[in-house]
Amino acid sequence: MDDAHASDRALVDAALANRPGAFERLVREHQGLCWHIIQRMVRNPEDTRELCQDTFLRVHQCLHQYRGESALKSWIGRVAYTIALRHLQHKRIPLAEAHEDDGAPLVETVADDFDLESAWADAETTQQLHRAIEALPPLQRTVLTLYYLEENTIPEIAHITGLASGTIKSHLFRSRLRLREALETRTGVAA
Amino acid sequence: MNHDLPPFDDPAREREWQVQERARDAERRGLDPTADDARVRRYRLLARALREPMPGALPADFARRMAAQVAAAPSRRQVAGTRFESTLASALVVMLLVAGGVVLAYYGNAWLPAFRGLLPSSGTPATGWLLALGGCLGASWLLGLWQRHAHGSTA
Image 1 (cartoon, rainbow over the protein chains, first blue to last red):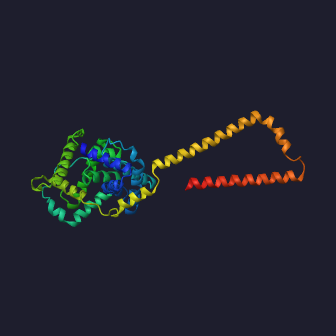
Image 2 (image 1 turned 90 degrees about the vertical axis):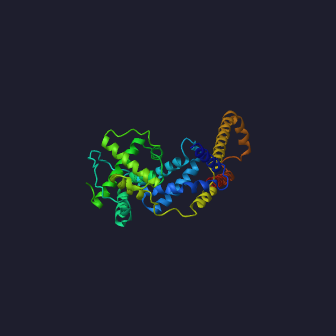
Image 3 (image 1 turned 45 degrees about the vertical axis):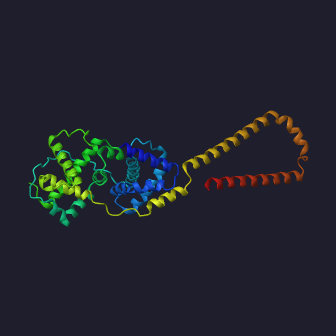
């Protein structure tokens, strides 16, 4: 962890000193993260490209404010998230559902005849799953992507989104439960 | 990493959460799914879909183009320096005008008769033409000054 922070600090110092190639390396190392966050939020590749550009311009303007208290990827992720959030607000797209249902009873027992590999090989099942992911609100889609694809921890996601860790845990729990239900509707295997 | 999080109040929800986490961990480590229970296998399918690379990406030369773009723009320090110089110049002009006003207020009465003596007698046509010429020269000088300032601030 200390090595990672030291490496982040060295890269930021090099970029601030305008050393050749430093800012390019910083962009190359974090452009995937920005794409994942912004594309999951806005779902439009053209807008995403433009907002990624805005993100790195903002990062360049504010790089002197990076104090090294968090990982550089979380700090840049926060800039990308804020820019995508403003875009959604401008377009009046809600970030999360206004009413989240917490009172639904949980189905803990499910039929055992579910084969992971054959379900994965079934194109219709995976397509339905991807459609269900796309149907989630922007915040939940983004939180899932950060947790699974970027392998961020819950505190890191909390830092990026500016939400409490407990709220991130709730979003993860509810969206995964919702996706499991969508899967069971498709395969019809709920007990 | 996430062990510090408090558990859900509802034990059933906490059990479900643990199943979700176990499935994520098993998928990350590529463990054999045959030993998993039915719910873990379902959540592993979700994990697999969520870990798939997203379609589309930024252009291959995006980082190089961003670096060139920020290198072409003036740095924050340069912008701050220009702004400081401009503020300082404005402050000096204001100070000069104030000092001029003060000097005029103190010594104006003593200087005025001497200037009156230099001017041609009022009421002659030559005086009017001289004042008009002076006004034109002054207006054109001020206009040139303003244009240079406007051009400099947008460059």
